[in-house]
Amino acid sequence: MTNDQIEQLTTLLGSDRVSRDPDALTAHSYDAWPVAAKWRRQNKAPLQPEAIVTPTSVDDVSRLLAWASAHNVPVTPWGAGSAVTGAPLAAQGGVSLDLGGMDKTIALNRINHTVRVEAGKMGHHLEAELYAAGLTLNHSPQSLDRSTVGGWLATRATGQFSSRWGSIENLCVSFTVVLPDGRIIEMPDTPRSATGPDLRHLFIGSEGTMGVIVDVTMRVFELAEQRLYETVVFDRLTDGIDAIRRIMQHGLRPFVLRLYDEDEAPHAMKNASSRQPVLFLGCEGTSAMATTEMNACVEVCSAANGTPVGGAAVEAWMERRFDFSAVENVLDRPGGFAETIEIASGWDKIGQLYQDMKAALVPLADEVLGHFSHAYTHGTSLYLILIGACEDDDAAEQRLLEISDVAMERCLAGGGAISHHHGIGYVRRQYLKPYLGEVHDLLCNVRSVVDSAGIMNPGKFV
Image 1 (cartoon, rainbow, N blue to C red):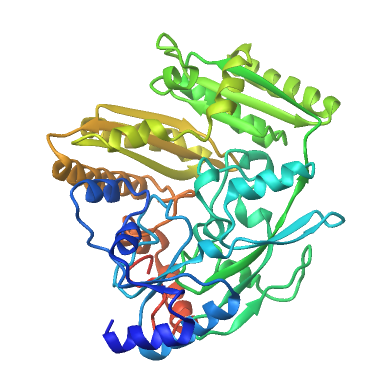
Image 2 (image 1 turned 180 degrees about the vertical axis):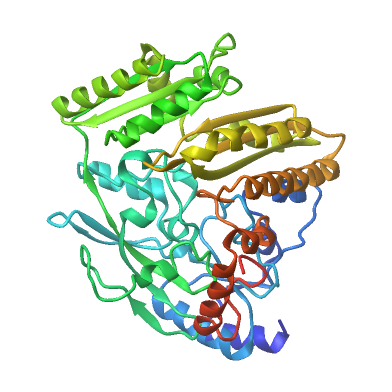
């Protein structure tokens, strides 16, 4: 950006909305991508914005985007900087649009069970407000206390309770989005309509490449009357996979449904001697409903050679489920690396895909842990966690990039989706076209119409 452009932007929005403070620019040069953690330790900032804009209104966002489109200045939306793919990093400089100042709760509709909030609202703050009113989002990503509502929509996020309550696309009712030319669009706020394509999905998961979501209306729910937990141990991982498949295909919907392989089981159970695949189950609702569903789930597991051992381990996990410190501590060590890879596939492919990906990744890390945590009637997600150490941070950075490449190549070869809920961002951008095929060309065509100036989060996604 030229000095003249900075001056224009400051005149347009005010000096309190535009910053070029070096510390602020540095802070917006790193998200939670493990490679970015290694950059930070090496004082490298290859994806740094040239200015930070902090709007406090929809009008601020509209004026910024209209100006940026007219002057061909890149704009990269920023929520809380907790993405793990480099999605909010300014790949081509320009403006980092920090929506953290737009964090108000606009309205709670007790009759419709919806809440409308600004996009910069932090997840744990919203959940606390709802909990005080006897309500809940039932959207529970591990990053709840470090992510925003707008960020959830932008990355097509999901939460730990998705097997019962669905992902963000199921929980979102409507939203307001500012298009790249500055136009403000409000999506209809109705339960459902047959009025053409659902254009919400142009923006949900678009990672800031189609426009800026500025407020969101979400479904909310009454707090459950009762929650029940059970832990089921299996001799073979294939039996556990079969059990969660049958649970979903029988129409059961436990809100916790997490199957850990024998390598992650000791971590999940907090017991080094636990070396068998283990399933965490949780059922909720009215007392009668939770009891009936849990009994049915346990019956399915028993038929798949599972052994119930009590719910204490699941209850303990519920208390620590937002703790990401183990991975962060590894990344904060010289040469330490840790990565999380989440993909998805149908039931007929997921077992072989798990074996192929794990075999390819084991030589690249000291530990490779696996679990299945978001299930559907026709398939499930697979989550792999890799932990290891190299001689220094530069080597760790290169190892992380190698891990990502190997994982994506094996996933594509096995017919899996290259991301279940982390998104594409910067790290997976070159693998999106091979995954989507001709759909990628359609996506590019749509984007060229919506963002004709090409200013929105360039260098990522498409």
